[in-house]
Length: 527
Image 1 (cartoon, rainbow, N blue to C red):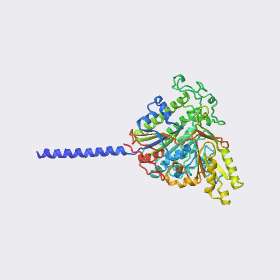
Image 2 (tube, rainbow, N blue to C red):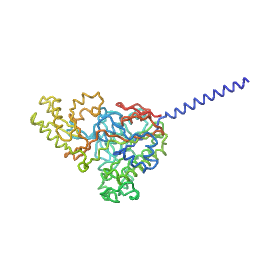
Image 3 (cartoon, helix red, strand yellow):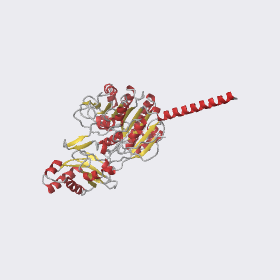
Image 4 (cartoon, helix red, strand yellow):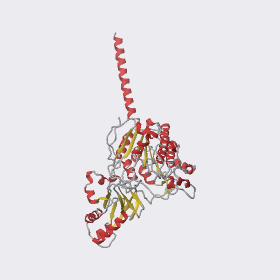
């Protein structure tokens, strides 16, 4: 009897120990960090496009990310929209331009008295490019920076269509940052990064794979089987203009190439080589790969068309191939994948009049010329307006000080004058924005000293801006939404309204690293 009693106690004890051990192991497995984080950004992607074409996608591509994880078709931002470069900085730093300093891809520099790129840096020569660039003007740390600071053996790579996108996603401490140079048509980088051009990108430059991608774009499937009709101006050969597409040592039609699905194939090939050749995700030091694809092409202004349908079918296949490689090389159970898109201000609607929609054209070059004449009538001869870019008006501080004029007073005059122009909805002096700095409103969150103008204007809905000097056109987007999907071990986080600034702290929690030094986002909690 006694022996039986002891046996029962021992059996019960062993059962409890095994149960606790199993629960602990299971809990540890659920909270183990991912070995590879992949941020897939599709420049120009709109949520409605994903939803329109989802039934045409294969199960393992975009549909897999959207349906198997967390998806929000309408993530927002806490600042006034500018362009993709600003969004990338905000995504990677988890904060707003007020802290990371990237107010736009370009801005007026008082020191240079010119419009400069936010990555322009003459100290660092380029490789396969004439551009001299660095991420020095990005004031905050990024996800990749924090990962490298915590785990020096971790690998961080960024692959993008442009230098601005690549550097914002790669940050300050990346192992490699590459883009497709607009002039050479080759994979390029900057000597800012110690290791220069990664070997896997050198191979693509040298193995003739880039010229092979320069081919005519015709429909992938029978054009008669497509859901949407062919655009009224085009025929079965989707892009007759692309029959002239060439890649030789003398001529590289890079601009046209970047308007075809084949540039996405190149980006995918680079990402696959990075994962395979550099053994990303193969140890306990988590790695980060940032990849930029495009949804913008020559006829993307006609969204419900066979051209756009064909583009998205191809894009889905390309992303599926990348996901398959991640699964084979690392395992999706060891990975976290983020799908998102920056602000799309490429498409400018020129047909408002025919569609009877309110709107018009605001010519900023002419407007600022008239503004300078107005200020001369008040204050005397001089170049009172030194610069203008992206709805930011910059005044001549030196001339203002020499004439002992109060900056606030002249800013008020400028704002009042600009409000008289058709299409201008608001004109706000910078001193008013700085006064509301602690109110966390979208305009103050977009303000950064010396890069934001002295007066900032906004246009009425339906109006577009044109600038004769820069041959530029901008559409008006006030409250853009961003498609956002996160796949992590097939789990679903809490449902709530999120911003793109929340992506960064969410990834930091999954990778178990500190937040970047200016991060203000709130992480999603996975169940």
